[in-house]
Image (cartoon, rainbow, N blue to C red; front, side, top):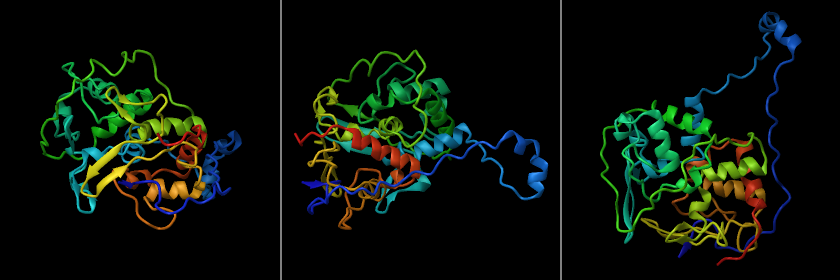
Length: 308
């Protein structure tokens, strides 16, 4: 069994080289705004333009959420971007054959309203009331804020339409009636920043613990097994194993922050060896410096527990 995160060499001591995040740009003072014309003539910088919802959605889908890791056909060199988000066979095992559908405007979602598509993404319920099965990480996506959910939907409406029908998933296991009670009250995100709280939010969007916690018949064990690894993944690369992400010697305690960021964003171990799929290193590599810092801060906050 090959572990796709833990290096096969001895762990290094935890370094004190946590990278500092860049401060967020501040608003121009009122006096400067009143003199905007003069400043423009002088060539002064103006405040950055705010992201549109679709731009925010692109940042999420093509970054921390890594949607194409399942929804984009894979070739020998990775995702086939000319067919981005057009669906593919994700996993076939004794429990299910999971096929990620075409979520471009040429797929079935084109006939769904924005509200129906949002509910399917966050709660796993199609417009006809049927339940979407694993491995879509609904337990994690329930934490997605209303604003970010709307942004993801806005972006999906803008991606190029790709004509493709990857087929339908089939399940030999019973699916739950729902993944939780209906989300009828507003869901908000912590303020963006290099904080443990925002890092935890990013980890939910990245559904890190869906893979890095043991799988039970009821889904990932987010009790005693939370973040302690245990899931196996079979693919053309062989078998990879999701390791312990707690702050324990069996997990991440032996790595510096810089090493963690490199492994998350490039899939490269401290010894230079390449890690295995299915972790979406290419998508995570698009995280901003601030977001990567927040994610590492969150991982450091998980109480250390040994491998199960």
